[in-house]
Image 1 (cartoon, rainbow, N blue to C red):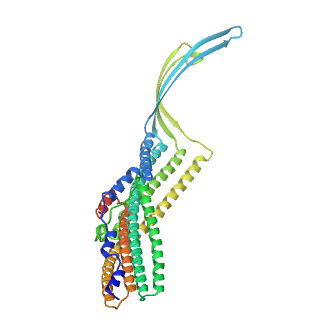
Image 2 (image 1 turned 135 degrees about the vertical axis):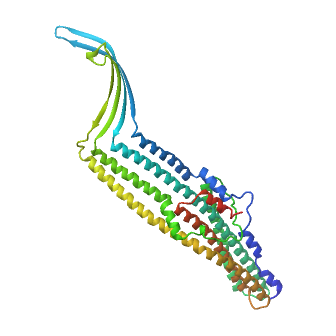
Image 3 (image 1 turned 90 degrees about the horizontal axis):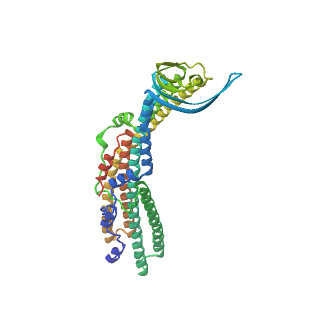
Length: 444
């Protein structure tokens, strides 16, 4: 095969492929940090969590109010017409009556009020833990969508390179056929592969647009381009901790587990509230009352009344409602305990899964980097063999496909490692915005 024909079958230079995969960011590209900050401002799910947390904070005050005094006041003004029949005499009287009352009631002994207070604290803590979980969730959603865009860009770039490769191969086949050195079958086979590659490019373009739309929906503003991963990225074990160390952190700090533990506290105090329906309540009561013609016997009389005392309310029978509410609350507490156990199992499975992915990714990424380097050397060696007449263009095609596959697998392995690292931290309850900024340093 002549050198001129060999030049025809060569694909785009490898440097072009590397540039497509590892192109530098532009001024219009949105960084990972910018995407995260925009999501905090615009993501509807996160904003809803912010308002839910603000509302949950008030439960602490609502619960405490049950232990504090209640002060109430009332004022009444009436115009009255009184008719008195004495038998032989009927007397009509028109008069106005006034009454002003100010009362203070302070619980002294109330198991219901105490349970309400403790339940309010637990509900407030429950909302705070839920919000912590939502803070981690928005990080995972933004980062996952951001990395998905990068992966789709890599896949599109590789699809275009492969399409260009088959287009060049078709030209060579046509040239060889015109010189009587090739067959029609070779041309048809290459055309079939070119058509399939064209379809793969269109699919890759659609996937990229979908990924960009997903990221746009999260950050609340249009995203056209994102920063690229810096060349030479290698994975490392996060903090060098063992699985048992991560497990211990997760059991203490995982926000979903904390949420359910506070949920158990809420359910426990609900049981105490229900049981309080059987117990007496003692209140301190102070009253200040001023009245004018308050009754028919005190017409044209003004009275000032000041009273201080205690009031005891003793429940006797409520038709079985208190016992039923207690059993219902106890069942709710049992459910909360089982929900906590189920979530604990789920968190530990997720923790183990992402820890294993992170550990295996270190070796996998190193191996794929070597695979890319080896594939590049294989292409160079194949080209030299073609010059010597030992290999044919199909061997070069196979070598180049091997390089494309290795590059694609390397990109995906790097992104999987990043997501696994973030999910591991989320399961342990240590994922924060600082982790996003640290990850963003790997992009340009």
